[in-house]
Amino acid sequence: MKLVIVSGRSGSGKSVVLKALEDAGYYCIDNLPLSLTLNVINDHILKNELIAISVDARNPSDLEKFSDEMEQIKAAAPHARILFIDADENVLLKRFSETRRRHPLTKQGYSLRDAINEENQLLAPVRALADLVVNTSELTPHELRERVRERVSSNKAPQMDIRLVSFGFKHGAPKDADFVFDVRCLPNPYWVEELRDFTGKDQEIADYLSSSSLVMEYTWQLKVFLTTWIPEFSKQDRSYFTCAIGCTGGRHRSVYMVETLGHYLKQHYPNISVEHSRLNKL
Image 1 (cartoon, rainbow, N blue to C red):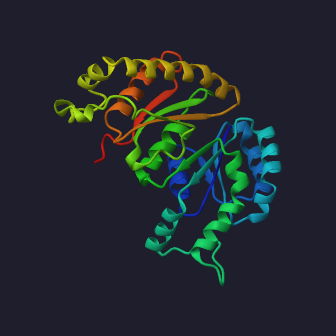
Image 2 (tube, helix red, strand yellow):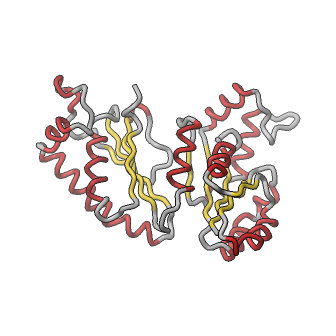
Image 3 (cartoon, rainbow, N blue to C red):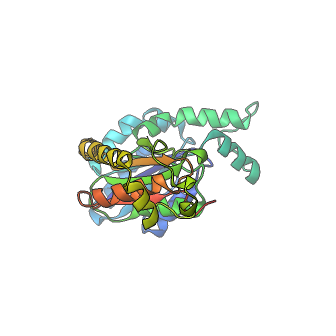
């Protein structure tokens, strides 16, 4: 049996995640008290089923004993994973204002911001134990569904999934990265007029950057760092590892570096994925 505990702040996209898991064949249960989760596990454990259970702030008493409950759940289902969906406070405020939805913790004398902050405190124990945190502030529902499909619902070997992401600092760094590296110190092809319209996936940019000893030194040191420390992270029973590499705009140097590292690490870690957050955006 494969069990995923889905939690997160209201308005962050939990319903989208549950729908994506349901489409992937999971039996989804929304807002099930943790005290009943063991019953569900015992009922389905021999059937080798895929189960997703949503846990949120509507049951505050559950959250107070979440750590103890999860110990019992993992004893019955050792491969159980916790997926936490989050978003920035200002994004949540905007989403609730636009949809005119009522926050589940709203009460008399409470502002929407107060309710969001209270929920954040209630869910802190869940977030602390999460195997994967996905911040949806800059994700569309389609992108969120794709992220869930790639990193949660796919049937992969029980190894740590490694994700390399390129980004532009002027657009903000990924919020779910374990490590962030800055390559803005390297030569910038943007200032070479005939190279400006290419991207880090093009041979012209690869030739330009690979001719720099500074770029080669940076690349070598990143290879050493990642091949040294990825195995150590994997030993901690982590399911996911994200390394983000950024340049100014996220189209040249960071893309080249992620492509280069992805090709190199693929020889050692077949469960690696490469993502470029700015290539298809202005």
